[in-house]
Length: 21
Image (cartoon, rainbow, N blue to C red; front, side):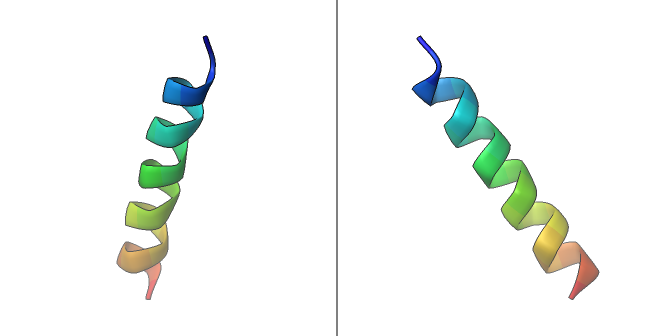
């Protein structure tokens, strides 16, 4: 039970990356 959390974090990272771009 940790893949789901990792996926959520990955999506958050992508959002931050796009916002920084």
